[in-house]
Amino acid sequence: MTRYNAIIAIDFDGTVVTHAYPEIGEEIGAEEVLRELTEKGYRLILYTLRHGETLRQAVAWFRTRKIPLWAVNENPEQRRWSRSPKIYADLYIDDSALGCPLQFIDGWERPAVDWKKVRTKLVCIGFLD
Image 1 (spheres, rainbow, N blue to C red):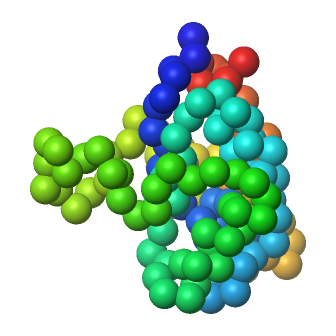
Image 2 (image 1 turned 30 degrees about the horizontal axis):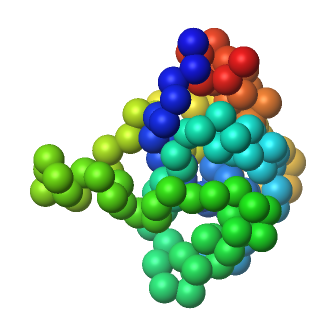
């Protein structure tokens, strides 16, 4: 069961790339899965504490990989029905979320999202085939 037009909020540091703030961290396998999600029609919101130049660098990470973002740090439709600052999404992928699969690699200061396991979970809950 594909959930067309679902909104997915994606954290950046430790989720899309390894933790290296304020720099951009290393690749961890997010690109392929994120592209697959957008090709299925899902709308991605970059949901991050980055701001200013560091936020522009994170947005550029998506742009150079041709992964479209629907929004950045907001849900554009949400203001019609709520004034809450919490971003509404159907799914949140964040290395700090309870239950998000992590990988621990020697040399990394902190764990990062394991995108192979995330993809498996997305298949299990019907977001991907």
